[in-house]
Image (cartoon, each protein chain N blue to C red):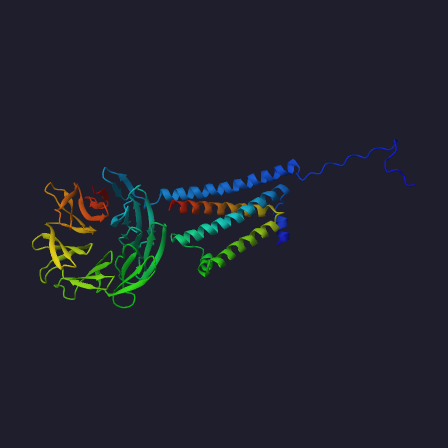
Length: 114
Length: 376
């Protein structure tokens, strides 16, 4: 896997790795914001968790949901950081962060509109 | 003898040590900042996408009503062809139903908010409102799913699911913090209730299939038909404080009358009796404590009454071709006019505190609106 990635993905320079680091920090913070907004929307009663996996954990309780959501994203960001020498890691992190930012802003505006 | 520690005149002085610094070189610091700015662009792009999606969704929201200020209150109408349904007045708020949507309009600001949307092809019942809570029922499109009684806490802005209601059910109603609803989940239809603050549940027993269910203060009333179609329905009133019950026949048997609308004005039960034979409708008031009945209004094509406190309001055709919204205080005053409506027919009237509202339906099916006015 590593050798395939090394062959196919161009190397990422030191500046690119700095960008990746910031993007991963933003991704981690956005994940917390998503968790808080989702929990608040569920508490308000106006939203339903559409992600089946998260719905299972939310039904199990807040602590399992928090542990799973923070844990899975932390593992994901660490994995991407482990692959920081490859440009593909930066593209993947940027895509994830962009999507997360869109979801969080949408949720925030939605909550504020109520 | 040990040598001197100082160098001689010919010794070269050592170079001063380079100053220590903890500050990163400027170019390294700049690269961190540039990296942060670049990652911020990714964040910004996502945020703009999310905001645009939200704006697009809101612009296409079919539930958003058209609310315009009038000299006496507000005129509220739906858009996108949504049909205006049942509504209720409480305090400074108007709760109403439009298609699958349940909405709440603040009568101080005119702003509306969406309280609920029934599932695709599902339906929402007419909401009921008190000073603090709104309750309504959302039913799925198929009878296989369970209907849900929802409660919205106006002060906290929070919506909670109250109870699953199986099978045929009637609109839940609320007064103060007490909600009651009908359910036939476990056998024959029953009236159940809950204190929305303490969560205490209670049952008022079999309803016999309530056609109208109302609550005011501690009194709950409902009308249920009988097996004999010629027999009048029975109105049952229960006082929640002591469990006292009344059973009232709204008209004599074999008269061919209809019961249209039921309301509680304090401890007085008010209903409309429609007589197809004489074409004359009557609004009657029955004092539960004195067991006495009196006629409040009598005319053709009366609109079912609404009541709050000791005030009863209704609508009736006026001589000029329009509709007159009128009211009377049960304390003994004469009926007084509240508003004249020209163009369109008044379908229902509402009263809540010092605010009166009426639902007008024009000739066009979807050209309907709610008009509110403050009593002097």
